[in-house]
Image 1 (tube, one colour):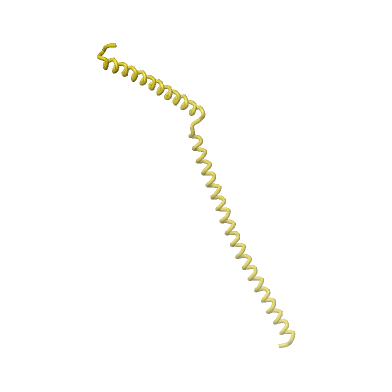
Image 2 (cartoon, helix red, strand yellow):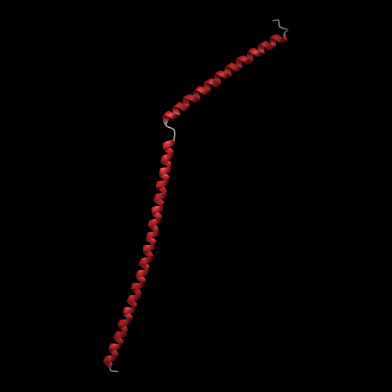
Length: 115
């Protein structure tokens, strides 16, 4: 083998090594890129699910607010509570008057019906 052939063989081997290294680097780059794409896809899916969950919660709160009593409802309820409180005070007064009358009758009877 001549020096020229040895040099050509050496250059061919060196070129083969460079190409092999380049192919390995490309393959590693593709693998890294694929992993990053998968992770990005997962992050996008997580974000989408989180937003979807937030929208569902907002819709739930909206439905609850739609069923909540209005100011007019609360005012009517307040009027009814005031009416009940007035009726209780009236019954309390009547009960006190009846108790006083019963006490007077009891006293009269204890005195033998004479005053």
